[in-house]
Amino acid sequence: MVRVVINGCNGKMGKMLDEVIASMEDVVIVAGVDVEDQGMYSYPVYSSIEQCQQEVDAVIDFTIAKITDQVLDACVAKGYPLVLCTTGLSSEQLEHVRQASAHIPIVQSYNMSLGINTLVKLLKAAAPVLSEAGFDIELVEKHHNQKIDAPSGTALLLADAVNEACDNQYYYRYDRSSIRSKRDGKEIGISSVRGGTIVGEHEVIFAGTDEVIELKHQAFSKAVFAKGAVQAAKFLKGKTSGVYTMQDVIQ
Image (tube, rainbow, N blue to C red; front, side):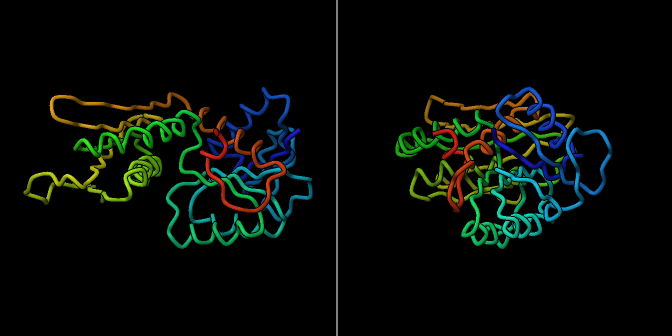
């Protein structure tokens, strides 16, 4: 049995995790963490991770970047493995993740979807071949009108996968409105769309001479992210300290 704590249990993803885990026989929520106990859960809700007294195999965090440092410090102090799903982390926070991983195992990813992380594998295989053949690379991401950061962490995850597979020879172009010149062959264009209730859509376009290849992923429910996070929690059980990614989880 995998024992998890949901940090931010009153949030949208916290409630989705509660719903997804309720249908599982090998995972149990032993506690939630949020600013208040709304009295709607079968498990205790604490105002901080430090207050938890349960045996825990993983904390799952889908909160906001401004409290990530607190989450990391609390998990290190308690010795709790962490599935860190929060996006928009600064370079300093990513360094904090690395430092914390010397003490606890951490799965850190900008997208927990098993589909997206399979797409990463496909991109790593396709990108070197198509790049060598001179294909231009563009990425379009779409999200709901409440999303704060742009481009999405997932867009950067996909762009980085392509770039790393091509020996990091590309740079990213986020805006062409002020540029009056032909497209540079060494750029990856990243465009963001915000509107309605779009859960998440990412499309990577390889445009060559007389042919185009498009690799696309669409999320129709936040449940796909919750399910991936639970898989990551299962993966962490018994793992030694270090930083892991969803690529480690799905391999």
